[in-house]
Structure formats: C-alpha cells, structure tokens
Length: 173
Image: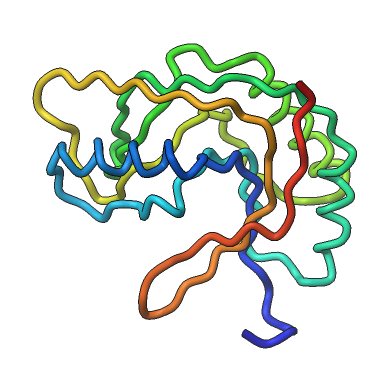
C-alpha cells in the first residue's frame, strides 16, 4: 500500500478473543449459508469512517483520546438478520454507556468535519454476510466487559479482509 493511498478506517469495540472464538464456533454450528466473518475480525462498530487520508490519523487519535466513556457489560442475546443478508448478534437492551460512547464519538467526528452515515446507530456484531436467517428458535448468550474502544484499519488482499487495530483507548471503570 502506498503512503498516498487512503486508509479504510472505523472505530469499534474489539470482541475479546475467547468470546470471539466462542461466537464463531456457535455460529458455525448453525450451518447457515453465506460468508462468515473470521473470529479475529469480530467487533461492534461505533463509527465507520470509510476512506480517509493518512494525514488525518493523528487527528482521529486525538478525537478518540478526548472521550471519557464508561466501561460496561455488553450482552449479545438476540440473533438478527437484515434484508441484505447480514446475520448479526445484538443486545436486546443496549447499555446506556454504549449509546453514550457512540454519541460522543459521533459528535466529535462531525465537529471535526467527518462525514458519517446518517442512519440510527444499531449496535450489532456481524456474524456473516450473504446469509439467511436460521429456521427455528436460536438463543444466543454472549457477554463481555467492554473496557476499551479502538481505531481499526480494514485491509483486503487475495486472502480476504483483516481488521488491524491502530490504537485503542480505555473506558473508565
């Protein structure tokens, strides 16, 4: 990648490795069609930035460093499916601290001139793309303590897409 190429960036809550592997194993047992998201890529997006010039990385890091969000437990207890074939986990009751974190990040990014999606924030963890909903009742039950959020770089090559954390910031206990 050249130093002049824009970076595909997003802010997200990282899914801890033990939880990510448990989620991936659970999803795989459902045996649904579609393109599964690799366990290493599981996350909950807070703000998608799309293509951004490298020159704005320091500014993005400074914006995130100014956020004083609270740590919280995230409980993913619902399985959802959107018309575009996106199979995902979501909380039946999103924690107030999660909503506050997303709102604070959104406000700061907008103030700095970043263009963000205008649709309402719907916290979810994508399991698979081009999928279909499972038949029957499926009851997921995954939890983790969200103690940090991160700025991620999305990189694609012949082997697929990888998300790499560029920096992370703690959430207050």
